[in-house]
Image (cartoon, rainbow, N blue to C red; front, side):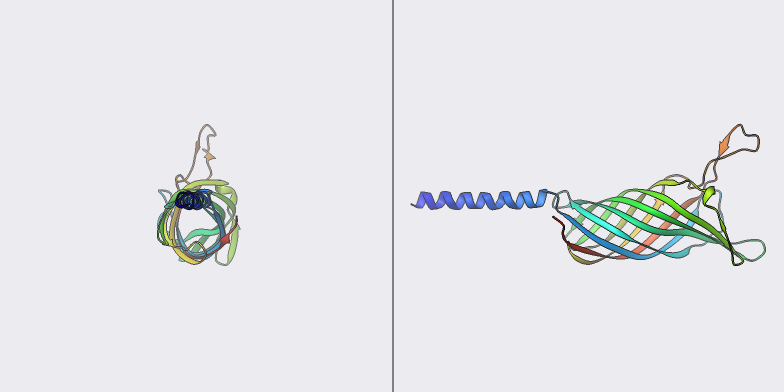
Length: 208
């Protein structure tokens, strides 16, 4: 009888452990929303004297656990970027860019605190330069796609409210390559976005 009870208890324990293992390593996915403010500027050898401007970003996220410490978090975000500069007339020219960002961050988590790093693909939706109240489209001067990276830290429980701080930038210039006046070569200006984002997030319950 004791042996039978012990066997049943052992089987129950193994079953519970296996279920917990399956639940955890079965990549439970948590979806949510995030939104916040951005402070961006233009860097690179082809720009000088630019100052940062404020904008915002918002979108949807999914967090997929890899193990007890690491997870992948793909996101789809609308994001404003740009910078401003005072020209020789004393007027301020503001360049504002509208992007659709797709970062995929690898997160390392300790309790509810995390650090993250990963690639980001950005698609340019529109770009305008505003000077003296007049806006000029400059979308055609820039590449449609940017490949860059994200770095960040923050606090996020599996469900509920969280907050974070993130930096992102492209690996290469965002300007489009153009032909030289002679037409026998191409070059591009060195213009890169640098963006600091502060945000709040809200994760919904397990989507499984």
